[in-house]
Amino acid sequence: MNYWLMKTEPDEFGIDDLKTRKTEPWTGVRNYQARNYMRDGMHKGDGVLFYHSSCEVPGVAGIAVVATAAYPDPTQFDPGSTYFDSGSSRDAPRWFLVDVKFKRKLKRVISLAELKGRKELKDMVLLRPGSRLSVQPVSKAEWDFVLSLE
Image (cartoon, rainbow, N blue to C red; front, side, top):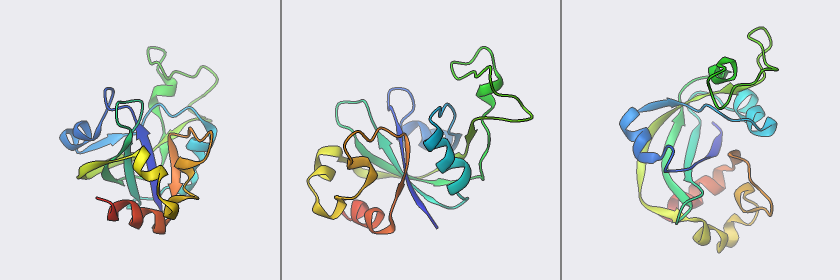
């Protein structure tokens, strides 16, 4: 089992939205490294720290599970989509996604400021200078520690 952190802006799609919808395709990722993590690294059943970004209190808001293996992101083929990619084809798709399933909302948001202050998380990708990936790996030790803060 692998562990991940997936960032989303809660005014666009937050943990409460996932709770309502139960399962959601993680569309619109247009960073090659994040795509590679989803396409090559994620497996059904992997744990996801659901992270709210670009908001008043960024932080881990809930837990989700990878619900499917990676498959081509359909938005890349839709000319009406913000995520349309004219260079991608159905025969050779460029962008992939996984479906994410709601597991639970945390009792409180574990804020970025709180995470930054923990020496146990000094190697966490999220906390590295310049780290902006919307999909990133989390070690088992980091996963366990973050959830212990709840």
